[in-house]
Image (cartoon, rainbow, N blue to C red; front, side):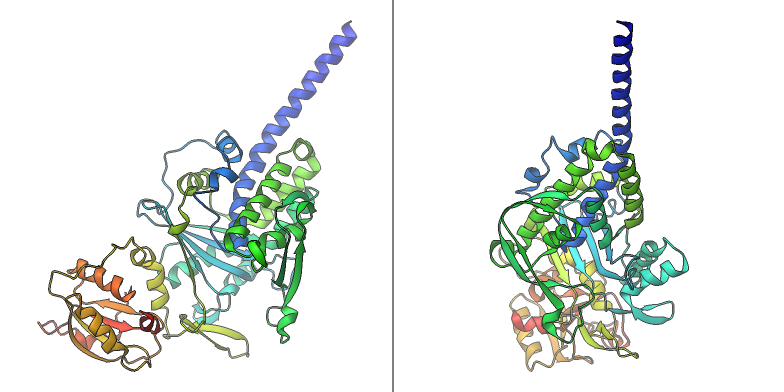
Length: 476
């Protein structure tokens, strides 16, 4: 009888120890899984939020509700919350096992406006050439050079450089490598994924083949069959990132849902007893996650972000891509060594700065009808394009809303893709400025070029605004 009691007591102790191990490991793993969710945002290229489906993918009694038991509640504000603008830099890189593994091939600024629950995502091309420490280099190399000098400094240095370049504070950063995504899934033995629809994607990019002279050699054909699939890391990454599928899986919403399915499958496997009671797997996972995710976000900050933005209306998600498209702000060229580069069409970064700074002003809820202004406001219009008669066309439109157009003329530079406004009233005519922005779709310029001095007379003939029209004005 005594032997039986000892045996039962030993089983209870072992069970208690198991629970302690699970509890301790769960705290560590949950912190990393929160960051893992941000990782999928990077892979998607979109913000993975939907007012219609967020509750379905992450039910209140599920994963994020569980996190609350492990993260202390706090009333602290996030950085940037007081100024109603939280900026998060998202970086994705290949990983140290690849040539140029520290080059950041994915660079995005996620900007969140707490008061209105608006989200803006700015995609910055890796080939954009920028001034860094007195020389010009591709923006994707900043992280790599910093890591060469001091390992682990890349994320912080890149954040500071981009903050200075676009004159906007970067409050947080998250950097992950794609190999980490693959390795984590492989380390837990793969994941079971229920593929909702069979689909083919003939345009999945092959890493390292982006500039292959043979255009078709840059892509591979992906095929997924409907039903429950066992996926390793590489397959899961392709399933999550596919964006050119034929049929219903070929849109951003379907892709976002696939990524949520992947995340849920990873979460289930990470938090299973099979994983949490395996000390070897736990040690490898924590080592992998420490290595593959670099962020200055704490667990409470990620949880607060989730709580504040989990129900974002999809119509309030703004996506901006800086590119060399016909109406883009960049132009392609070749550097001194013949490398492909992108530079601003205007010759400086003022237009890009304006797009980032004014994204929520330009996209404010507009009234059904724009009302004519009630105050005296004058404007000089410069045609910043080679489109004949564009300034005159815009002039006629502005006069409908009671603007006094003093004159129209050609701008010194005729390569503007977007329209910009110089406010010479120094904020004295905010209502007129807001109306001018709505009519023209322009952004506010914050620099003061030399040519602007000729309009700054300080007399009654000085215009309140100088509007430079860009090519997109011709679409209105």
